[in-house]
Length: 618
Image (cartoon, rainbow, N blue to C red):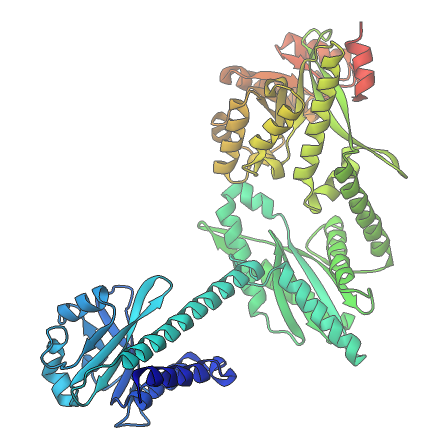
């Protein structure tokens, strides 16, 4: 038979094998067994084996061996390691050749300089006289070889070499596919599991609940209970001991929940920073679930050792049933979350069953969230302004921008009525951008009318200062309205700078570098440390209104306010007193050296048109 005919025959046999559905679905060892058996049968060689380079690349290790003399052989692990590993230091010429030449076709293996180092203890013992090696790749990297060994000297033909290379390429394709599968599994894990606890995440929980609801509907029987578990006061731990301590608490609680053995326990997930969810199947009677919540709370309340301190933690829980409380998977999630929030409002460290009253509250809250999303999308939130006066109380030094929302059914809403909804819905960053756009548009409108506005102060939430892209967003919005960033001052509360200090510090420094000023809002009520405050680029402190209210009669308020004014002076910061309502407030603060005053004594927050008319017109 001519070489061309032999080559076609060989490749036809390989194609029939590698494209067979049975082969495709085989595990890797069985595929290697089939490929090496094909080699020995078509080429009439004694042995065919697959070798791989370990990461050190100082050797090659046998992964699979097919030996015609031992038809049942499927192992590369003999009694000693002499036939399993081939070291570069023992066979330098072979390693040099396989790296440089790729294909090694040796007619007389015992005498060829590339392979004769194998003679002692191997070639002669196994009666091997000819070798044909072809490279196997993993992507673009040489990852191993396929080795064919003949019991007699032979001149390897073009069809022989072509088949060896084709089989090596088949193994290379297997490597590529397996690497893709590993990468896909790793990506799926990242997308569907929480890296801190190893538990499933919200996406996985949604899929599982959807699957279980579908089964219950199909069978016409069964029930689910979803427990929404929220760790109480985790923020206090983060603020006091740092975020690493908070992570340790979450990891410990996740492990405890994982270890709880309960009848009907079906699924456990971490669904938020301090939130977990547990699905119970069929065992959903109130009496049993009451025992379940007691067991969970008992486990969580056991002391947690963090940074050589013993912490006591509790949890609030909400429980919702399917099909009793809802009809759709998403309603089950919403109901359990609403019940959990009800438990928190009742005083924490307790559990609440979803009921009609919670349902009405939840529906109202979800409707408000939907309306808020629509308002943000359309940019229909408004901004009111409150003047900040100089120490005389007569001249406007700056203005604070305060978000307001005129709901189509509920009328004007103050922030206290919708900011919590925005925070829980993850809308704070979007809301902050919406407010800044309106402020910049108002500033531009005033300029076009020939009105020069003082600095405008805008509040930043914790969710905003943790986003590295915030300075870029601020500069882009200002550019769009042709407003200098230097016309803005940003206010952050003490609590909002308790997160990742590296990110927060960089964000605030970039805002200052762009021209803005920074103020600490509600000073004295949060958890900030002086070391953190002095290392951030603040230029102003705003004293919280709770300390101003009792002036000048309350000795404690006087002492606290004087200490803050003194601290600010020592740090070179100006001071604003919030909540100034009376002449007595104004007089005392003026005498004690407070720089600026803000409060109802001068003006309530007003719409832009009213503030312009009152302070800047004509």
